[in-house]
Length: 72
Image 1 (spheres, rainbow, N blue to C red):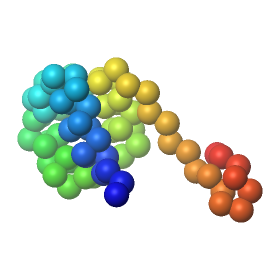
Image 2 (image 1 turned 45 degrees about the horizontal axis):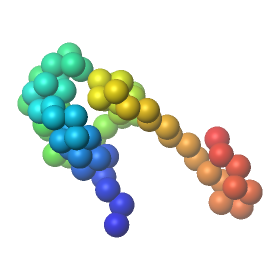
Image 3 (image 1 turned 90 degrees about the horizontal axis):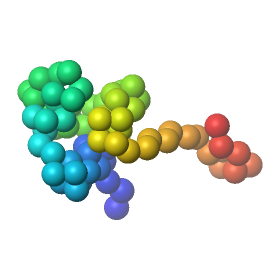
Image 4 (image 1 turned 90 degrees about the vertical axis):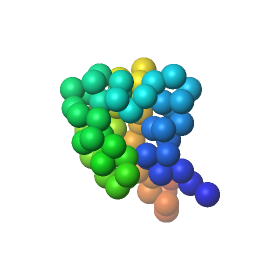
């Protein structure tokens, strides 16, 4: 079973000993706004990249063509 982006963020928060409030402050947003996005699992790629930077993580997004294996 694949984890959602929200689940992954919550796992990383736990490993970094950070709260949602602390992450929201690093992102310059409110705890309520971040909590709503986590609840809905509604993130843009830009959001995810900013969260990765705030959590000191790398983030990669790729498409892989199934017929050729080429990644874009």
